[in-house]
Image (cartoon, rainbow, N blue to C red):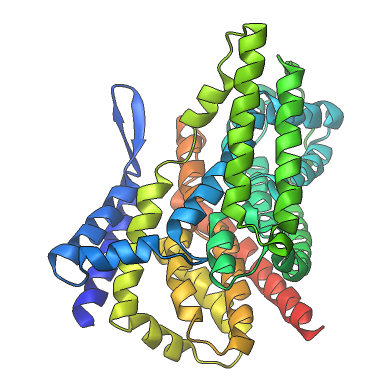
Length: 435
């Protein structure tokens, strides 16, 4: 047990160092993420040291259960692809430009428009895609307008990682933890709408109080209007995203697994896009670019972390963690511990770990522990850059655009915002379970 624990802790420490100093490498002008390689090495060590056999790993990866990591990866990547396609056809850029144009010279108006737009889009798409899309736009616009980009960049990041709690599809951590208990789309929303609403309002208030002085200065900037090259493709993307969301809502009632829904809609989108472009002989390759942008690095990362947790389960380490947390004040304890753990090992590994930890709770308490952990996994993203992959990607984009935002600055803002938002969300969850 001790050997397994120390091996996993060593992998986590290595992951932290890689993320802090070099989350990616550049080969012939191509940037390649390497954070997943650390965890992959850890999974291989589990086999080399004899902690797990290849048959045990294969059995765990192919088990027909709700927490099968292969199903979860298909679900998340398929849903992400639907969002990326909408970005490729220009929807998110057009909405960002619209927000700037409506704000005119008022930074305060732009602040509220941006928060509202990012929040709504995150609910129905994916927090990672919104961050990847809006961050470069904010950097470009702020430089052009000669205004401080930090209020908008951090507002965007906080809004995306707060409202991603609303639907099960908003974050892979939501998917992993909720499906482990057989919680469907509707059941998830029924619990999480209130904590998300509370957290969203709290985040907006604190962000405004922190940045209100920066928002008093007027701005002068012009932005080019984004033209949708193919409105039919935009309509096609919106129809598929809407249809997929509706089918996810009813999937638990008709006995259809969610990963089949999202994968089916993605295949449908691919088919109709190819047919449309073939008929009209378009040279644009939106679908090809969409597939290239898929978060494929999540595959080795999630699978490797799953292997590490299999080892922890086998040697009863997760049982010890559950015993340490106890069965009293479950919402507070699991919410705080998941929040802190996410900032030590990242929120996806934390979710895989806490999925097993929550299994040790009584059935009456398991839902409380799972939903509290979901809250911690989302809000932990804006405590430190280590809290989520979104934070790693966001920090990398800022470096490319020469926006100064150090690790300590991140924590300084993160502490002030994340702690009250976390406690507010957990309070909302407590209220929700009372009624």
